[in-house]
Length: 333
Length: 263
Ligand SMILES: Cc1cc2nc3c(=O)[nH]c(=O)nc-3n(C[C@H](O)[C@H](O)[C@H](O)COP(=O)(O)OP(=O)(O)OC[C@H]3O[C@@H](n4cnc5c(N)ncnc54)[C@H](O)[C@@H]3O)c2cc1C
Ligand code: SF4
Ligand code: SF4
Ligand code: FES
Image (tube, rainbow over all chains, first blue to last red; front, side, top):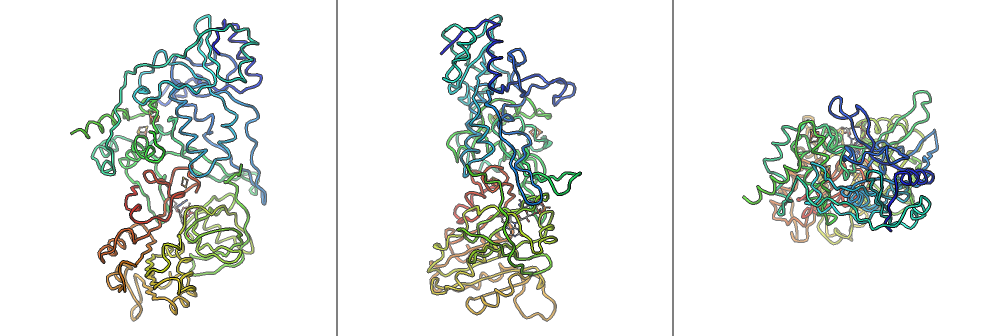
């Protein structure tokens, strides 16, 4: 059902929703950006529409609301393991169309692919998604090329518009909040990006031969292996396990998992001084081929959703989208 | 829903010392398990390590562990009379059906023998179930030889070539790399031959080359791939090669598939 709300009703809606749900949305964090003295937009808890950054794509994706950067799997004392409590409340996560497609990728890995992940599943089943529109598409995204510009499986769509607000509610459970806030029914269609500045053509004939192309070494020579492109990506899912023990009580500690990057040293190291991808070129190839080839081979659709965040964040100004276009072009030759 | 990350305590029943750096831990375990599968073994505070099943007994499972770092050091230091935390089994392991009735050749380097030990041992005890079984096992020096007691039994039943890279002067047994002994292998019916190669990546590479030179087909070769693993569950990503997760789809591969895996 679609609704129109006044600014006061929007505030009321958020207040009411916050009574039951934890609302996670992009917020501005001052001076925490990658480049010095820049601000960063990343996910935080909000209770009102004004706290949300609506007019700019978040630098980090919604990913950390489902998959914490650093998650305790269990605490141990000498002979017991205790699992920390899951989220106490249901949550609403505000995100863009490409990101909602990203959720499908996280689900694929964390709910399927062999085993279902206990920690991800217990957050995921308490999460609903609130779509934010893309009336003015971001500069670096290429969602139209990736077919991720029109997500329709949202629970709620919300758009503040000056003194008014619009919403489209597709989740029965959330309808009552609109009635309570006194919203009037209206026909609301989400703002979708229809065209991007960036256009990407996926190479169609990738094969094992593509792994040995010269282009990988070229990008490898520029990449410093900082891993930021992985951390901002809504579809990267890797982690490393870590055990920690507490300084004040050596008998107790915890086992954690922490986000990992395939671009950073150590990712493939095993005993005997063996490392499977030593050069940045090999690592860059591993990442790009996963996004547009290997993942699709396994699951039937590409991994990358075209959000453009990896291009925005790279300190070396490496453009992944450009790399894909070049690969497609090389194929033609 | 089951929380796969929570390990269970498993009692250490027996410790067999092969060398200063390699021990076999015989642990309590009830449940189905295949040779070549692996468990994540851990000690709280130190972390987890993927370790292959090197033997399966009644109510027990063996792990042959090489001491190389944080977790494995601690296991060696503090195992006495204790238990370890384990979760698993993971991975596909070796399917004995692929080897029954065949002329089997197992080529193993160092601790690579662990994941196939269960296979070799099975056929040593059930010789009637295969046509023949040959084991070529290579170790760095005589001091590195694993499973000495097993070798005594195996030598009675199977053709065994136990070679060392470096031997003291006057040593009369086989010396040199495992690859050296492949060209001399004889088969009644080469089409019925089947090979298993396990060991470090370079060893697998050169061993496969030698086998193919014998005129064998790729599908007659099985390999086991060791990669970095953090979860064993298809989640952490570290073990992935192309579209393949070694922890889920492997570590055992037929070479037809294995040769296409790119790091
Ligand atoms: C499927 C599989 C089966 C294995 N089977 C056996 C076996 O039967 N016996 C045996 O002794 N070893 C086996 N290994 C290797 C064993 O897992 C590593 O030696 C062990 O994890 C090292 O842990 P550590 O904490 O003692 O060493 P660390 O202090 O962590 O590091 C020592 C070295 O080991 C590497 N390493 C760390 N974690 C891993 C990991 N998860 N996988 C591989 N290397 C790692 C490090 O990069 C470093 O080079 C197997 C590995 C895999 C993937
Ligand atoms: S690879 Fe880059 S463009 Fe594609 S989803 Fe990840 S961050 Fe976005
Ligand atoms: S591509 Fe850029 S962001 Fe990614 S690891 Fe390399 S330097 Fe860092
Ligand atoms: S070991 Fe984690 S995905 Fe394979």
